[in-house]
Amino acid sequence: MDWRLDEEFQTPDGVIRWAAMGSGAPAVLVHGTPYSSLLWRDIAPALALTRKVFVFDHLGFGQSDQREGQDLTLAAHARNFSLLLDHWGLSRPSVVAHDIGGAVTLRTLLLEGATFRDLTLFDVVSGGQWERGLFQLMLRQAEVFRQLPGYAHEALVASHLRHATHVGFRPGVLEAFLAPWQGPEGQAAFYRQYSQIREADTVEYEHLLGEISLPVRLIWGREDRILPPPYAEWLHEKIPHAELHWIDAAGHLLQEDAPAQLMAHLTAKPAAPG
Image (spheres, helix red, strand yellow):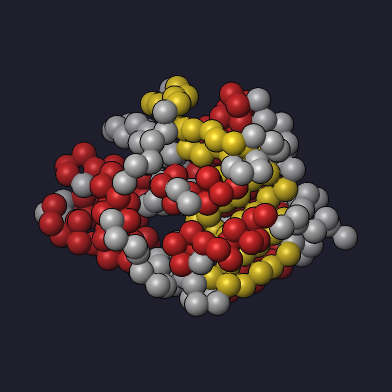
């Protein structure tokens, strides 16, 4: 699948790869785990018809560097995102975030001092008790998972990816998402990043969520099995002026399950806080 990030940004822990397309008001798309900017392969070009769109792979993900010793905490991702915004010269971009990308952008906004024009969060990690399910098991038994035979690891990751979509992947998409996590180095990278993602990094900003004054739009798949609808309701209570939109017959990956409906929301102007 042809999706290339040709630009590089150097951090102390390795290179982050990124790309930009289109022209106009800037919009930045932030992916989550265990995905990459490949999630935006249809959304980014469509948005780029009217916006300048920036995409990137978090350190340790996709086409960015993967290696031992990297700081892959949510706090580190937020610091890197803040540095990227400075590198791009963006002071008030629109930001769209998914999965842990939500926690990364919220930390960047509330703790790193970044400013956004508006913020769209869909099916995101944001706060509360989100260490659950397979993720919680991997945290508790990290060394056991690292020692899985390669075939068992690949089957686990593929199953986890399929669990995130309600309608299923188009041909070749699952294999593309799986590719960075294959082989001994990919397997080590997979559990390395998961073992560093903790609730402690969202607790630090939860008390500030009610102070967000910029336009915020929440979008959620009603069939999300990774972060079910109560997580959307929790976040809406914390940011009461935010718009909340539900998408039926869609799971955690709106980019895969309902791209047209997602685009309709992303191209609509978010309501100003009232």
